[in-house]
Image: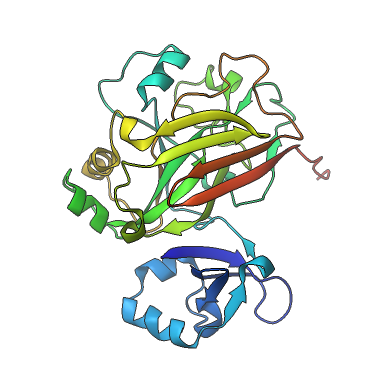
Length: 291
């Protein structure tokens, strides 16, 4: 199943709704049950309640709604760094002995088709990172490092672009600011449940910038796989419904490659098999009104 957050536009019931994609249509669960108004609410509901809503929910053409980030404001947005061997080589980093995580602020999240801004204060080294995203579906702590145990707490998988401002990144070891500029967390187009994915460690990932193939990787090449990631994080703190984890990027980023950084007019397109495509245009940061 493909779980989606989408905007139905103006008029009665306007705003963001949640539902699931069925072919070329989306089943609008919010229209059938207004209390199902966010993805987190949907993920916490008894499946019988969701099924009851689905039975009376209207079907809307996908072409008539605007897909949003599946979890527009995740409780936690965490990303692992340096998790592919070839990526370590291109960044001149040593192989980590343990997982290295950082926070992306929830205000950086945007959805499919939304523009990535080139920041006015940092326009020169804006980079892309195509990544497999994982969404937590059950509140959990101390999850065993086992496939069955981890997938039991995972709602599904999505696509993430971990946009990064590299010149700022070199100045702050924690990477929180350089990874959290507004619009620098595209997520989408939906959440695909584990039953449709099969083996999440057997997925091809490709990133294109304005049609140029930049990244061509495979989730099997992670240094710390996603089962290890969930076990590691949950050993330290509770993971909550709607938390989003970015599981690392393969090689092919622009860092240390002059001329490959993002610029206004580019389009970033990330494809992960069995999930779909996340595509975002790149623009200069709009001038903000004076306060």
